[in-house]
Structure formats: C-alpha cells, structure tokens
Length: 243
Image (tube, rainbow, N blue to C red; front, side, top):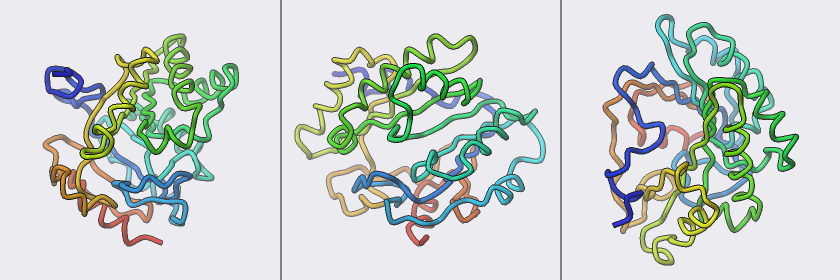
C-alpha cells in the first residue's frame, strides 16, 4: 500500500488540537483553468469577486484566527495583495494560507523569490496539481520545485503543500500525476487524495461521497460574502449559483 494514500501518513497542514479558527475565503469564482470537477464550481466564466470591505467585516471579533485565500483562482482578484496585507498585518491573524493553481506565479527564480517575500510570513502555499493542470501547464512541476526551494531559503516560516488530486476510474486513477510528483522529488510536500462527488463532479458514480461536515473549527466565505460553517457541500452549491 502506498502510505500517501492512507492514514498512515498524517496529511500536511492537518488540523491540530487547538488550531486557531481558520477562515476559508473564496475571493472569486473566476478561474484561469477549467477543471471539470471543480468543487467550488468555478471557471473562466465566473464573474463574482469578494468585496474587500465586506471581507474585513467578516473577520473574527476576538481570538486568534488563520486566513486561507482560495477561489476560483485567488491570485486573479484585483485586490489580492490587499487581502495578503491584512492577513500579515493583523495582530490576531496567526497564519496566511494561499491555495493556487500557480498559473500567474512568476516562473523565473529571482522573480518568484520576490513574490514569496511579498507573501510574508508565516505563510503556507498550497499548490494544486492534477492531470488537467499538468496537461495545460508544462512548467507546473518546475514551479513546485522552485517554490520548495524558495520556502526552504526563507528566513522565517514559509512552507509548501502540494494538493495532488486523483480521479477514480480514469487512466489508472491518475497514477501518472503521482509519478510526476515522485520523479520530481516532491513527495514529502504532497497531500495525495481522491476527489469527492460534489461540485461539478456530483454525477461521478464511482467517486466517494463527500463528508458534509468536518469536526474542526473553521468558517467558509463565498465570493458574494455568504458565510458557512464546515459544510463543504453547502458552500459548493452556494457558489454554483453565482454569476
């Protein structure tokens, strides 16, 4: 058995006891890729963008918290760096997490180092890797390697997590995606998991049902400012109805 497909290996960025409240903020439903199973029902046709002022009113009023920027593709938001700034400057924000497909990230070494520096610390970059992204972005694996090296060279707390997504029933369950990560020497940074049956993939009969709620402390925010608890499916369906 591959330990990366089992609970024998605790996933990276796994919720730990007493972890600060995490806010999962979908900045937009617009994405520069069109993964056909997208769990947040996002695509190039998405046209809803979270208002920055609305976001600031949704931050917890007390206690430590973490901000996870996601989407759609969050780096496309015209005020993306304002969201980064508030996360890194807020006295009670414990950590910034960015979920991205990496399409607009700098690909040259020095430019990427400058981008990482601007992201600040503490920070976790979660880079998505799947068959669709690999087919459309031949530089994705080299980007992951440069992010690994850049995070390792940072003077403070920056880390990389690769969100490696597989599909059951497709081309040996997308084993080639896992192989690409392994051959690049990136396995220690990878969370490898099977996609669930929700979002655009709600009709995939061979896929596992999603877990409707997760017993950890977090809030999800949609690009139109709706807030949800840990019900992944409810947030997904709310995003399906956005422009």
